[in-house]
Length: 334
Image 1 (cartoon, rainbow, N blue to C red):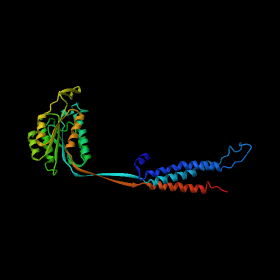
Image 2: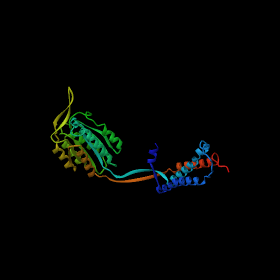
Image 3: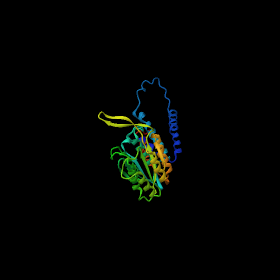
């Protein structure tokens, strides 16, 4: 607890702490002065004096210790210990973004670590952290689509919504058109000058009520830019398959409709990306983050709270204790 407290302390005048060098100098001076003041008495033998030492002589150094601690604490108080509290405020115009994430069964393929879905969730959370003033929403889709989180600036709510994404929440399949149209619906009433959908999928459209081409035209009509991401390695990838003997891994061919995803991106003003591993996926989100910059100014407000009072009070207690001990218990009589 003490170390945690000291870690938060800063000194306004740290150079004052160099005055603490007087502490060892006072100790050296006291030892030298005491040795010079000792009177010499010649005796034939020290045998009778060796066993005699009063309790006052044993505890007398306490007086000096109190004085030294008092002086040390005064020096610390003079250095003005403080705690620093920094508050950041972001002001500016953000971007409204919907993360549209495929949650179909194929997203459990393990060509990513630990699988495609968990990798997508991790980079989505990282992306959310970097977007300070943007409103972000989350849409999931497979055979149907669902709004996992509406547009919000609450990062904690967004990250919680992303963490709860898993396979099996919706009917299986890959309804790209439904997913995109739901994302568009989240943005169509937005007043933001920049509206973006980031659509991530690992398959080909095979269902849904709205076709991908129709969804693309709706996005164009509302001025919504769509970035598309195809997720999956080249060739074959290991998929977990349920059998009577349990879950086994089977190699299945990776099929991504890149032609469709490229068309959606190109015609809405976005870009298409292909992610073949975790690093590639992270780099894609970093690139989108770079392309869709918000007009933001960050102000840092620093507040200092003075903490010298406890040190000063402790110093006064030790110096008062020195005076009391010096003129009562350890008083020297002529």
